[in-house]
Image (tube, rainbow, N blue to C red; front, side, top):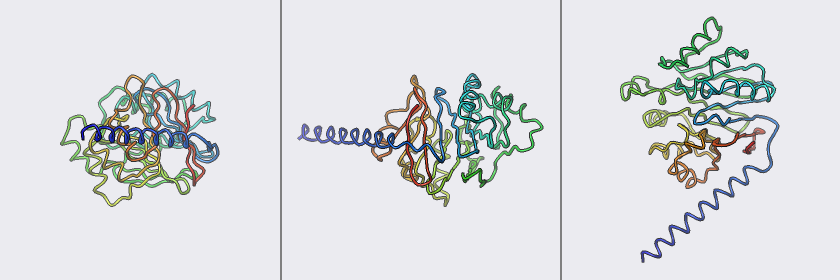
Length: 284
């Protein structure tokens, strides 16, 4: 009896792995080079994502401080010499790290960030670069804005007091969460949200269903991820992580069980293309 049960579990695991590889292969063919692109850059266990649509360019997070020159070169390589929006999801050093360098090297039309005070040197440098900037928003309420053909809805923490009362290290749960719609397709950027924030999000009346998700906190596993993935129901997931600190196996197992195609930036750039009705993902 035990041997049969063991064989059944092994067979199920093999089927899940085969299905995952099939989904990966399907996502990599038929690249969609026209329309909307998301480029997730390999900046270690950190976030730096370039969004492009026509002449519109948005940067969500800026990796570490020493990623600055690389980010600028990648933007220029993609024909971007100015940003319509720089969005910093929260003030950890792996998200705000190169923000001051970006502000110094490129024209940035608008800056969005959460409404709390960071305590890191990278944050202080970033604030200094914002002095006198005409369009800086610290978000306390959801905001809806259109950039080119991209429709943004950005959500700050629903209850900052609950988050800040629960943990001294509350930066992650203060992350801005961005929903971006292009045509019929939707994309969710989750910063580093954790249990408390995920619970707050799912308690709202917002429909969190999206086709694609940037997984929170570099693929770190937490029990609340199952609730999040069941609410989002994505077909594609991108994880910003490093080769030394990859996504946790439990996170990958969860995504495989849910039939989600998973891509990560551990050793390569991950590009998502969308023509408004179809999505494809590949690596560079």
